[in-house]
Length: 237
Image (tube, rainbow, N blue to C red; front, side):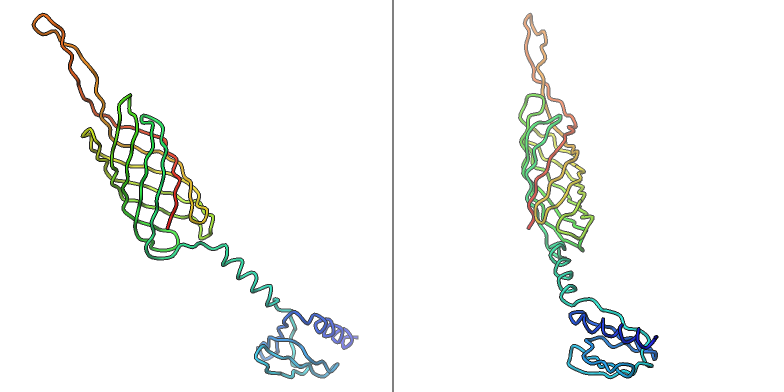
């Protein structure tokens, strides 16, 4: 009865010719290939990928396992490769369009260039141009900042976080700290993120003083720290 079951097992393996077999021997060795010949209750012949053939006796065999289909394995490797990130160690750059609302209402265009240390960590230097209205007056400025970015996954689609720290050089002389923090998602080479940023600004108001029997107006400038909600649309290269 045992010999019959063993024979039927070999026949079932033989019928699945498109799957590789892994023949495990009692001495610890393993032979991977196709079973090309079966002598019931005596031997089996296994042919490997390189054309070599091995004859194994029944009493030398520990077990036989159906291996993975090579075509399926290749397709899985291809799928993993197609889904993997394009990011490589070395240079990486970004161009970003940034609408913003808050204490300032306007937009900015920035660019960042730096070094990708691994699949996830980027560090670069950035600059750009900002134009917005702050309390009714025009605000034009050039931000200069260190750009830190961390991609959470090594796939074409991945969430990420960025931090900018630097200074803002404004047209009205209110130069000072510039910084932001945002979270987003990358879709291949495009990304969308939202966050909070802060920068310095200058505004003025008109005051009147009584001078020699008449009122005169004076412009008084004051500086403030603006906080804005920003949306960033980026393309990387």
